[in-house]
Image (cartoon, rainbow, N blue to C red; front, side, top):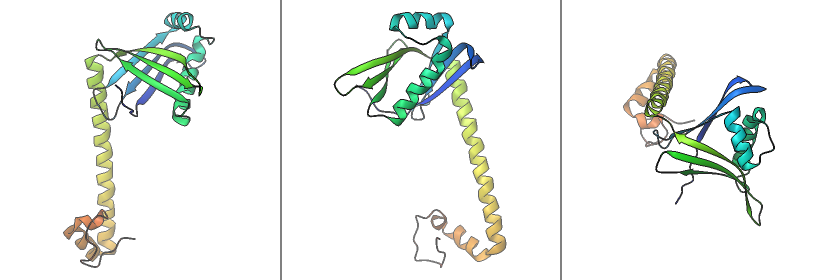
Length: 181
């Protein structure tokens, strides 16, 4: 059983782009704040992956390969799939699969682990604070617009305050003379 869900992917490198020491891929979901998985790989771990999956790329190219595969899944969803399979024990696997019309070919698999609770809690706190900052910014913008409308057309501001649904474009248009443009 599976669901199709948009997932946020973050790829982090330790070291220089041309010669990374370590790579971490984080998966998160807007639909489930507690969904957070990580794939951590250094050169030694990559050598095992390379041997098991018979990969022809080197570790320094691994981040770009992941980016290309993720972009292919976004740009060509009919032919490139990313399938995330979770286990009850907290482990998971991300499989990149290409639909060749007559068969499916597995291109690459990455092992993931559920993030520790403190990491999940930190991510939720960060996302909450970011949203709270965006809300404060939007409220400040709204206040600026209200101040401008108050100076330019005070009767319009009074009308919007009496019937706030007019300000959001979903209210009754027949009362009061305020129009949407």
